Length: 247
Image (cartoon, rainbow, N blue to C red; front, side):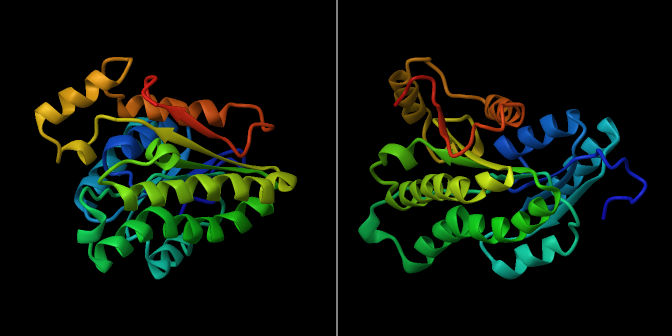
């Protein structure tokens, strides 16, 4: 738990799925901004612990790692027993599934929905009371363009991200009177491990569809998070697309 000797102006952020890719890039940028961090991952506990130690040493912040399944209500509740105050929640943890819907198992469907959508409910349910205590806060959800337009062979993933977008808009209306902003970033093709299942030929074909002629970088998604942090408080309930002109 963060030290009680820290300045009352110190800010705290929870970033889910932070061991690599977009999540780690977000954590790194927040650390540079002086945020004290709570970071989660599902499986890469050692990697996350090393990342947390590095950020803590480099930026002189407190950085606490948790290995947890964010689609599990008990795991999320356990994390929040360690959190007394929270200024920012970044829901980044996510998984994909590529395949025909009629060949998808019940377990695969539940895993996608649990990690990508149920986790929003669990984290926000705990984070909102902490933000209400301070009469301020920001919730940023990392979504996908497939939540806007859908993708063949990724029906479950598209559905989960579409749910995230609706969740964002609805919760923003609920929390706006309390001074809490809720927004989402609908990312296009970002160069992360999630795309490692595709062949080089598939990646080339994908890149050729994107007007920017390249995949986005995790750092660019992290920069968008900082942009939302510094945006006017009147900006809420938005799903901002960042996809190089793709969709």
